[in-house]
Image: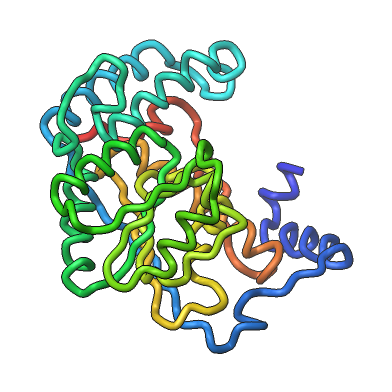
Length: 283
């Protein structure tokens, strides 16, 4: 297979697509919802605070020192401790207060500061927003910051521990004026409609782009009357940028197999070692 890939990548992808098509029954949203407004996805680069940067450098140095060698072998031999360390890196990118041994104010998070700035603009315009994260503890800290900044703005929460999902969703949908929904990526990814919002914030990237797509499409769906803006908050110069690069490759591969067999895909972008995974050290 690798030899065929190196010999003629386009021909191999076209062959795969041809084999898949007889088993595929698929309709795109654009095919059945001509009136649906556009959805614009943007990367929102977030600078880290001094505390974040210091902690990130420490964890990054630990990873580069303790997990040298070919990444596949490292994952086979020491997967659990490496994945735990990568989680610490990702938590640091989001908010240092997520770390078990760090006690700090939410404003020590560059992402929370960036989110507050953007939400202030939306609040002034009377718009609604949905904020997604994989970390429910991050949503709790965002809620604390929002209550301090705008105590009168209605705030709704939807996580895996929410027993009655219908009540916060219905209240958010019916509310007139500015409102904010904080939702975990898993709990808010399916089975709900939040089409009264106009803006989606994805606080932390996940390896699987389909999970994020499901989440943002809670807002961009039937009944939506306005253009939807989706912001992916990414900490500059960190592993989050590498996750975004991997997700782009996955989306390109999916498109080449299911949408356009002639689309290109860079197979050489896979991670070879921990240096490749982490990328350049954060400034």
